[in-house]
Image (cartoon, helix red, strand yellow):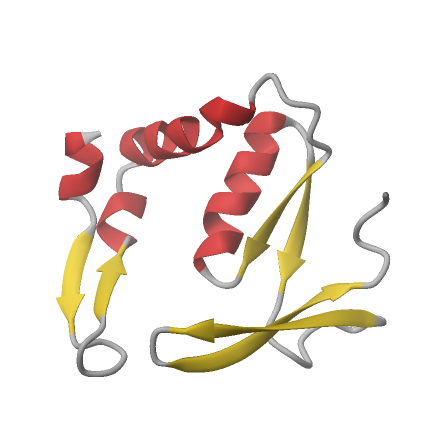
Length: 111
């Protein structure tokens, strides 16, 4: 875990003053450490009966699709408004520096 942490760069005041951004691009340059990070991420769910992984753009697309592939389940993208071509559901939420929303295809999840 310590080696993975060394590959996540802190960028102060991005995208706004007072925000500490965690830059994962150095981690993504190492296939070994990236795989280890995803293995740690999915470890609690290996024996679950999950049927899909949902991921918020943009980092969630990277880690979510890798996690879904390793768990052998589907991936559901959660997108910014107006980016999905089919009927959607929308959820609004707060960030440290404002508010935003995400959309999901209405038929992306089953009960």
